[in-house]
Length: 358
Ligand SMILES: [Zn+2]
Ligand SMILES: [Zn+2]
Image 1 (cartoon, rainbow, N blue to C red):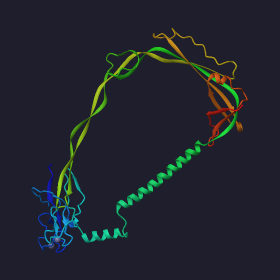
Image 2 (tube, rainbow, N blue to C red; image 1 turned 135 degrees about the horizontal axis):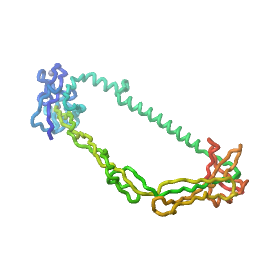
Image 3 (spheres, rainbow, N blue to C red; image 1 turned 90 degrees about the horizontal axis):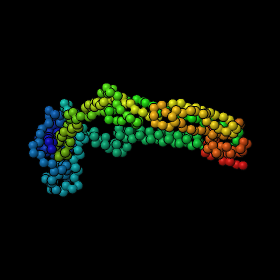
């Protein structure tokens, strides 16, 4: 550890001597009064005095009987011999930090009378105003508002989802059918040299590759350091370095290429549609080149269809629901069904709740 140790400063409350040293001056060099550890403060960079070979044994204790300042190693007061177990331990100051290149200011003489007065006022509630308290109060308000908003959203969602049952009857049938034709074709696509796209006989076009940024490397690039001061509570403070690695970003290039190959590609669709059960649903006739063979220019087809029944309910509302072709063909016109309907949007029927009633 490269920690360096320095003397804290303190002011004598009795004679007003300032900038006494925390270790060297256990008593005021002017009037002899014992050091009050609560009056300690950090010096500026120019004022600081190093303590060589400092051995930290613990936080100082003030004798409960005579107010003498004792090191932590003492079991009994060095002045009056009283046991120190009940003595008040020195309160340590918060850490100070500075960025590289900056300098420390002195944390300044303390007004102990004012500090004690403030502490008492706060204790009896006359002065409940530290920044943290205000913040937590605001946080509570924020939480309360968020809670109300969430409750409203949940409520709105529940209302939107409320349904009621509606009686409807089958009014008409409709259908549509599609023949989707694909053709085995040559295609090109861009990709990295080492990432072969899906397809048959894939190859890279000669001379088609160019350099392109593919990713970014993070390269360590020195350190950012700051200095932290810690009050040891025994009249000294330590300075330590805290460093984190800095990074710079460097682009990584790779070959971006045009790939060529063969695959089934969408060629065209043919749609048919109709109302009612007669005539029966049919596909448009398409003639396919060398059907299904994996040669350039050959074609294959995919067949699909939708079979809907239109239901009518109150106030001439209509609901359209899809079925398999077999079930669809068996739904009688005028048959009676129930369906759940959203209260907020009575035109939206939930087809999965349809139930035949007769
Ligand atoms: Zn003094
Ligand atoms: Zn004592």
